[in-house]
Image 1: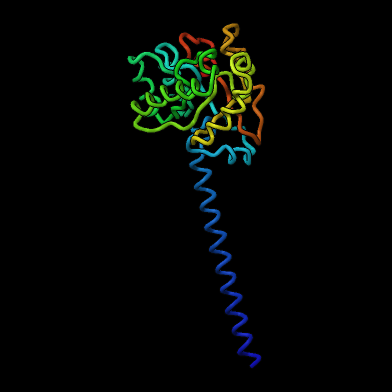
Image 2 (image 1 turned 90 degrees about the horizontal axis):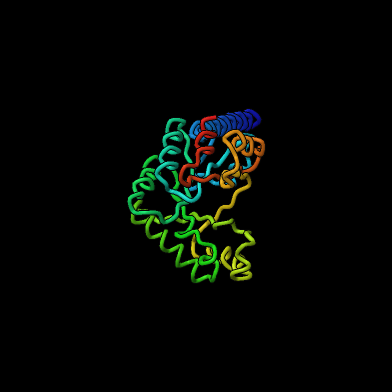
Amino acid sequence: YGGYFMKIFVIKKKFIFLFLTTLIATLIICYCFYIYNSPSLAVDLCSTSLNDITKSDEKVAYLTFDDGPTTKATAKILDILKEEKIRATFFVTDKKEELNYLIKREQKEGHTVALHTATHNYSYLYSSPEAYFEDLKTVSEKVKRITKKEAKIIRFPGGSSNTVSKKYYPGIMTYLTSEVSLRGYKYYDWNIDSEDATRRVDENKVYENVVSHLKPNRENIILMHDFSANEPTKNALRR
């Protein structure tokens, strides 16, 4: 019987070795596939989990643009992103109908079209929850009409912790941040401000504001704007 059990032991040992070898090879292939298909710079907020980015040792940046679209800025920014093969996220507002083609282009070129409210008017938006959601509905319906998709990523004007809203409706942000989630939206603030909205910075300062605050092991969400004639941002993207 000793020889019989020895054969069984050898067979089991070979089977375990073969199983482990196959498992390891499969994991290596899957990992290589993931690395090969993972973008290294700006990523689409819709298709990549922010939680995944925090596990990376690389500096990964989410380029986000607020307040567009505009003819002079958005079109040029899209040209640059296309040349550099970078995807970004555009938090759009309700501009003139003749600019709808830019929203369509954002979608066509692989960017995320997200919602920033229709009017961006603080005194109206934050006058009541009803006013905010009515305004959000306007831009949401517009984006859906243009892209044929329902956008569920949003950004509050001024951010989710803005203090300006207090003078119109105290406590409204606490309510809105909870309610938007219940309605199926996901909101994003930022942790790097390019400060391009101040209109007192040049391209060098915009660039420095961004790169000096990039950090590994976190989601670097960069706030920029594509309002009309934003030359500093357009030029900083070329750096």
